[in-house]
Image (cartoon, rainbow, N blue to C red; front, side):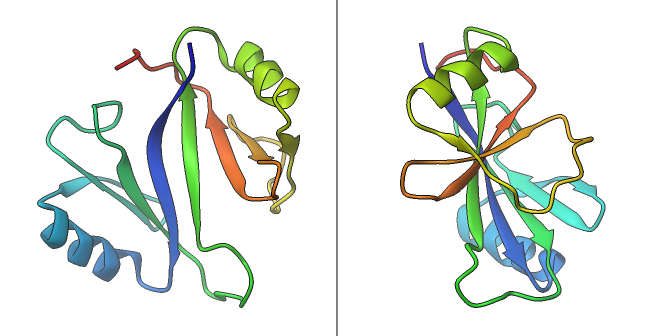
Amino acid sequence: MACRLSEIVVDSRDPEALAAWWAQVLGYRVLSREDGAVEIGPAAGFGGPAPTLVFTPVADLSPGKPRLHLDLNATDRDQDAELDRLLALGAVHADVGQTGAENWHVLADPEGNPFCLLRRRLDPL
């Protein structure tokens, strides 16, 4: 089995405004607000057949820093087993300033693009 793309995370100066704009474009609705971030998605919500969009507040949008990353969830194993699988495929741990208390892992693909492996398991599509 494989992972599922569950969220696309976008750094933004004004998460509320950008989420509202994308919600209108895609016909999505606000699913949650937490720590200044706004998640939008289809009526099925997180874990449905389409990924949600999460707009996170970032004061300094530095040139060259990726403004977008993918969040993945395992479908047929727990997070630790999926982490091992991804590392064996060539992913590497990435430091983007996390504290170590997070319940997700920040990784990078073979070209250095960051992505996160979330804890929650999702059903395969």
